[in-house]
Structures are given as C-alpha cells and as structure tokens.
Length: 76
Image (cartoon, rainbow, N blue to C red):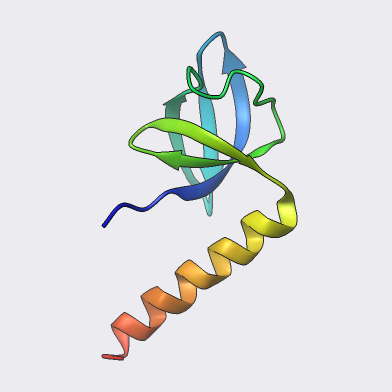
C-alpha cells in the first residue's frame, strides 16, 4: 500500500524545498508539481510533491490518517 501525506510548503529553491507537518520537516522535490508555492498544502509521496490540496482537504485527510493510526494502536 502506498500513502501520500499532506504537508505544508515552507520554502522552495528551484525544484527542491522544505515541507512540514506536525513538527516533522522534510526536504522534497517539486519536479512533478512546479506550480506549488510557499504556503500551499501538497501531497508528499516518496520525497515528491505530487498534488496540491486546499487547506480543508489537507486537514480532513490528516484527521483520517490520525483516526486510522489510533484504531491500529487500540487493536481495532
């Protein structure tokens, strides 16, 4: 199974930049999503930004990921 995680763009320098979610920062490539800008929410998969999201969709997706993780921790 593959998982793409919504993260917020913090900085960009050409095709590379930094994203953050819940205090976790990563260096990623924007080669597949050149229109992404600082402040955007993007899906990150395998070190690449692959899609832009609006903030509401990003937060909704993150809530679902948290619920799934919590269910797994509870044995559900």
